[in-house]
Length: 239
Ligand SMILES: Nc1ncnc2c1ncn2[C@@H]1O[C@H](COP(=O)(O)OP(=O)(O)OP(=O)(O)O)[C@@H](O)[C@H]1O
Ligand SMILES: [Mg+2]
Image 1 (cartoon, helix red, strand yellow):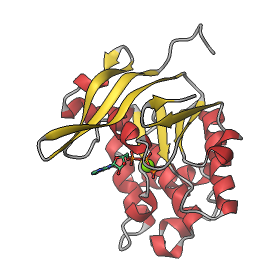
Image 2 (cartoon, helix red, strand yellow):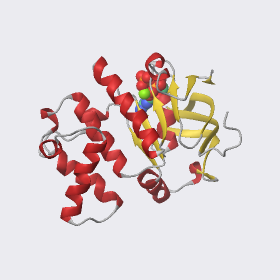
Image 3 (tube, helix red, strand yellow):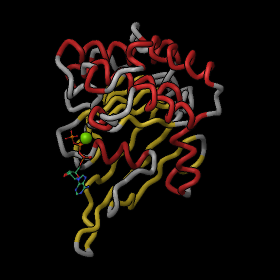
Image 4 (cartoon, protein in one colour):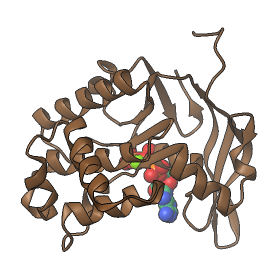
């Protein structure tokens, strides 16, 4: 599909291994897929098959002990696996944003939403106070949070799960990424909010021409929203 367009990102025969008591154990054996500009691709597979590891490898965030032991990840004609830490930081800030699994727990309980959003928005550029406020309000609006002044002054526990997930999405959007990887963005939510967050991702994909990799072990619910579904198991891509 889309054979006449160059992929934005290409995973090629990536193998991810873990060093345990001096021995390398391979967890993801051979995964290859491509992301084309503007599409939403779902990456699904059973729990434990290596979806999150794959996402982390993509942005150079593998845990200690893990390494990509084979293959390459090509983004804009460069192999991400050859990037040093500085380039990887730049990649995560300017190009590929990862919303990590269980990120809902990652919001700081004793800081207001505003304070946490400011930290992220500041990564991108310097702001004067007034512009910052306007930008925060507009980001919240973009993710469907209308009572935005109120939300900015709230603490995470005062918001529902669905609202907190939208705040996290707004923080990611502020980085204006080319590729957005959302690792299980809906698992902590109730059914209604799951649908709403997936619909929002779809809307953002279309409005901003974002390329989205949506990771989920729930292949049924993502099928409805994704342009393509990639099914993975420990051996690699199945479908
Ligand atoms: N830090 C770690 N230390 C040891 N093993 C790990 C670590 N992180 C992941 N693993 C193992 O690697 C395998 C792949 O994990 P990964 O988190 O990528 O799976 P997943 O497909 O994202 O699963 P889920 O759908 O439950 O999120 C699992 O067997 C897991 O136990
Ligand atoms: Mg996972």
